[in-house]
Image 1 (spheres, rainbow, N blue to C red):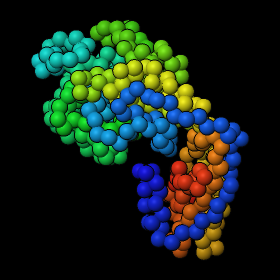
Image 2 (tube, rainbow, N blue to C red; image 1 turned 180 degrees about the horizontal axis):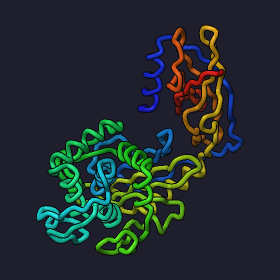
Image 3 (spheres, rainbow, N blue to C red; image 1 turned 120 degrees about the vertical axis):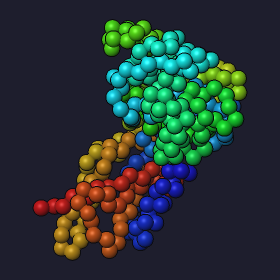
Image 4 (cartoon, rainbow, N blue to C red; image 1 turned 30 degrees about the vertical axis):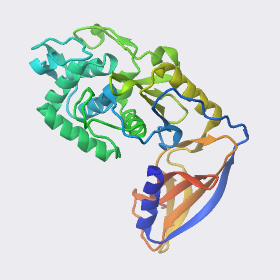
Length: 355
C-alpha cells in the first residue's frame, strides 16, 4: 500500500496524465504453492528494489524489535563522519547490561571497529559508544535515529535506545524493519560488514578478532546478512538479506523460536512462487517526446528487475505530464508496472534532449 500511495501521489502532481499500456511479460510457470506456516508472531519478506511484499504474517503489527534496532544504529553511524576516527569507551558504554563485546572503560576504538562489534557481536556497549560519539549524547543520537526513520518511510517505528533492550516506546513492525534493512543494504560499507563471517584484528588494526553470531550466514548460502536479536518481550528475532538478481530480498522474523528454520522456509516459498524478471537496463530508452518542436528522449533512471508471481501477466504503463516543459536531466514521467492489473512498482524517468 505504501508503494502504491507514492505512485499515486506522483501522478496527482502531474494533474492530467497521458498513458499507454504495453503488455510486456506473461509468466510461463503456472504452479503457485500455498504459503507455509511460519512459526513466528510477525514476519515479512520484501523485494529490496520495489519493496513489494512477498510474504506477510502480521507484518504491520506494532512489536518490540530487540537488537535488530542496531541496523538503524549502524546506518546512522555510517552516515556521519569518518569511520576510522578513534573514540574512547565511556563508563556508561562499558557497563551497559545485555550482550557485550567487552570493551573496557577508557579503551580507544575506531568507529569502524565499533560497527563490526555492533553488527557481528551485537554489542550493546558498541551501541552506546557509537551513540555518544556520533550524537554527543545517547539522547541526541536517538533524536537523529527517529528523524532518519521518518525520512526513510518507517511510519510505525520509534527508538528509545540504540541497542534495543525492552522499553515501552521502543517498537517497529516486521514491514518497517524490512524496509530499514533494505535501505541499509544500499550502503556499500554496511553491506560489506554484515555479510562477514569472521574478521581478524590485523585486517583493520582492530583491538580483537570478531566472529559473526548470525548463524544464517552458514545455514543459507545465499544469505548476505543482517542481524539477530533477542529480548524477553521481542523473543528471538532475525533480519536476513538474501542475494537476488536485483537488489537483496529481505526477510524479517520477530518472536520466532525457530527463526533459522523459518527464514529458510520463507526463502524457499518465495523462490518457488516468484521469478525475477529484468524489464529494463539502467539508462535505456523508453520513449521519444516532443515539446514545442524540440525533441527529447525519456530514459530509465535505474535498472528495473522485479519479482513476478507464477502465472501472472505484467503490463507497463507510461504516464506523462501534459503541457509541462521537460527539464534536462530531471525526472519526467513515470513507468508503472501492473501485475494482473494491480500496481506493483513505479519508476521515475529522466529526460534528455535529442540534438
